[in-house]
Length: 131
Image (cartoon, rainbow, N blue to C red; front, side):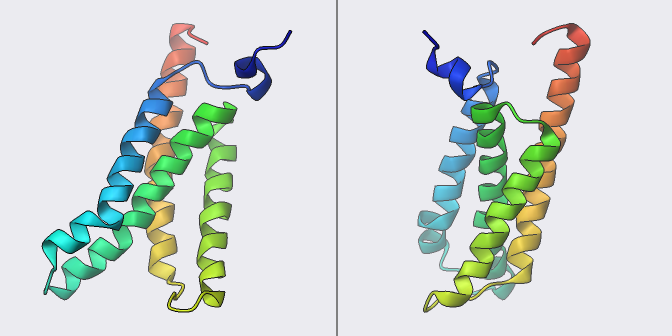
């Protein structure tokens, strides 16, 4: 009988799951409570608070993708960018929402930073002989 972890090819390194959960909580915090607590009058701060959820969503999704599928950093990068890019495109059709190129760029930056961490961790594990 096949165990779910083997069937789903779940990564044995639980760090990715912990990071995905932590960045998901950060994403939630930036998506709602922080915006209401700050009520920023500064335009730059408002704009940064608007970009932060995309940044943290990309990081969260990259760590989750790596954990749940054990995919390579390259595959993870493309999956995350496609999902978040489609999210920006869909916003064209949702009343009250507008797609923003800077949202997509912040997603790219967040994903890129997560991929750098994932790649360095995988290389270190491979060097040390850890699966």
